Image (cartoon, rainbow, N blue to C red):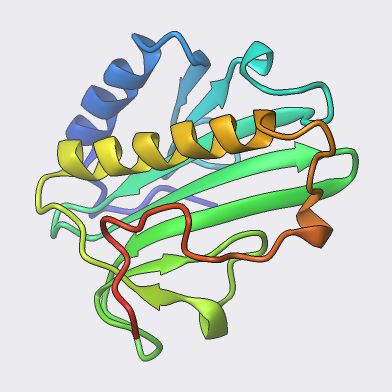
Length: 161
């Protein structure tokens, strides 16, 4: 995938720097090979139970204010992920959330995000923090294939449709 001309590269580097300062983040890659339009952060494995192999956060911002932020967890061959989006589309409002464990267009819900990318990142990190706490809250982990979204990650910004 190649670079696109409308990336807000400067803001993406600023947000990547903010991520790099957080204890939960292990590494930040700026526009890595194969994902040249994103900043990719890997989260510290010590923040997750052993059943979670890796967790990553990918950020893509456009100059016009549109964004796509995706969070992934890899679980012994299964993937749990969700995505925060702001862009025009035919399936939801401009601001919408693709729910876990497998983000799909038909299950996206309308959302309301802050205007500023810093505020959006704050919402994303709060959701990830809640997710990490919930993964640790049980001795019998709920694998991605067993998980059902109940609007528990983002009650403050998800809009009932």
